[in-house]
Image (tube, rainbow, N blue to C red):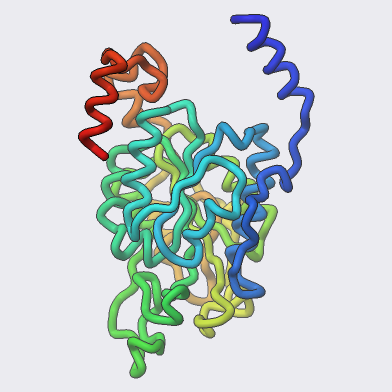
Length: 304
């Protein structure tokens, strides 16, 4: 290790970052009272408490209200296509597995058009954290049914009430092979920060589904709806190593709705750990291509 590297490490350790250091250059344009504000604030605090630096973090998003997230968060960021954030994030994580990769999106983006990527990213156990701001409505397009909207819910696209059974992202993630599955609520900041930290530190695919009420278009699943119903799993006897118990708790919905860690296992290797190309030589993104300058310029020119 060089003197320059040691000096840089000492300086970074001496500088204590604050949540505002993760504040992006663009202010959020979410509606006043939107739950997404809480998710943004909690992630900023979680990164500080974990000792992360902006250049060590990548946020990737799809399309939707919550998917504007990378612009509001000071780190590497990429705003991708609708439902395709996990595919892009997988590529980024494999190219530089030293990055802390956090994917942000909503229930429509992640569980609807992105549902296939959700299933296979969990199955592959890609080492990233997926924060889904679940408001149970399509907010950006002003109030249509989403994959998690309740049966009977009346919206612009279901004036007589929804006849579609909502998906259960917690149960889906566990059965798909996710190795860390939890649910948070923006009305419980302390728990949400703790879950974010645990999800980021987990080695493997971590899903954190967050109840993030849409105060403008969802008049059913409001803060008033969740407040008396939310029951943290840490307050009851729950074994998070038991996937069957996790699914059973996830299926509870009504007068009681559970939040917290449903399931966790460290028994499965990540996709990166199983990829022999990554065994030695450091991140792919920093390796020599094995091409001359002329060959590289020729390839790039053909792509332009």
